[in-house]
Image (cartoon, rainbow, N blue to C red; front, side):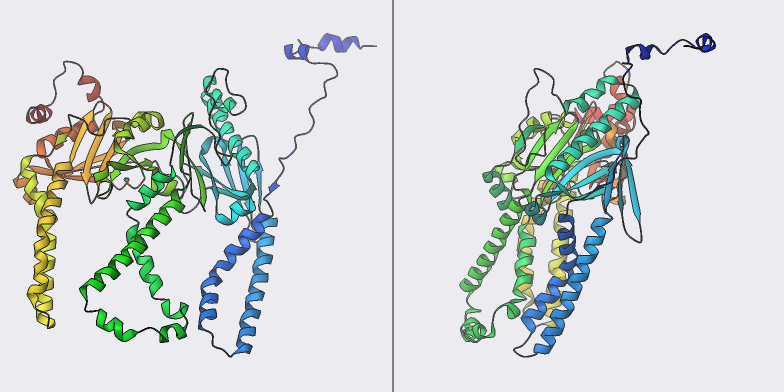
Length: 567
């Protein structure tokens, strides 16, 4: 029987209770999210990382030990076994206390036995979720997940979860990105932005299907991938031949330890001494050395960029590359500050270019020093940018490119050749004073000066800039030619400097920079006309000019003078 007093005091019921079933279970107590553990492969990878510091001492010991000394060998291997066992125990303990957890708003990582650490990253602060696979991790079929935020340092990721199964890593990545979109949309109250988060689970009807990644963990629409031919061309025209030559030279220093003494005893050293005076043999040896370095350059390029793919999904770009150390990198498009097109001396005659990107700083490394695409025909750059980075898609050879004044040509030529001439003169004096070699043998190197004159003329010819509305292009040449594409609002500062010689010729050096990245320290274009540079700096510092320039509002006197000089 119902108490009438209770019925008199009951307020209007909650309208939502009318649609609830009377048998619906009441919500239970709130439970803490479960801490999850990494795969047991964490122990193996951690063990090998701990032991790799002993590889070089072990190699030196194996190659340097004599025929005797069995007691010393036993001591060495006994110590090595104890160290390996200790490393195994340490790796196991670290795995046991290495846990991560997902809540409805953040991801946490806890590690450490004595010095405990716990890192927490809110979902809405996540900038990218990257997946890496080292060769051993690929063998064990596990993945390393790196979570980056805008405040991430350059030394390590904000959160790095090691040794997850590929399916678990892919699910975790999708969950983090979807949760980030959901929280950002809820925070702004924009329900339309929930669509990218829902798209992971169910694509809208009529939408184009996206091609699945070979590894099965990187989605999005495929924009472009590198073929085997592209890889070979990239390696053959890369600048990696220098490091490869240094590697060959360093390896030759260990020849005494790697090659048995019995083989060295059979080498006809007397014949080598006689051949050292034959220019043909010396030339052949140099060519063989260069060929080996060239092959190594191709090999390292193939290992680095093998399987390179560029994909896009919503406002994210995805890079996937690497044959041994497989990397999958996420690039938030809104973090891109500039695009730069690099044309080396080897690639420029073939019309090839490398595309790089600059981001507002996060992460330890992004796609091999910011490479958006390693090598592609220069004529196809704009079409790729239209799909991958529409904000920066512009003609890289604009017809209205502002060139440098004619009086700047001699300054580029002198700057390129004066250092070489001074070096040859100083070397000639030193050789003639302290050695028996005739000084004029070294001084003959001055005959190479026309090459530096030609290079200075090329630097002058390639330099220029263009500002069209919000689009800004700046081109210069160091060794290779570089074209930077950015937007007016991305430029962090601009500056004009002039030395006494430049002031006499009414020339200045223009400096500009975007946020972070390798261009964050700024780029410089020397010897602009002073009035044109002042007008350019004024345009970059006054965004309101872009709307006024389309009306009948008059421009400042410096701008008017610059426009009349470049008309």
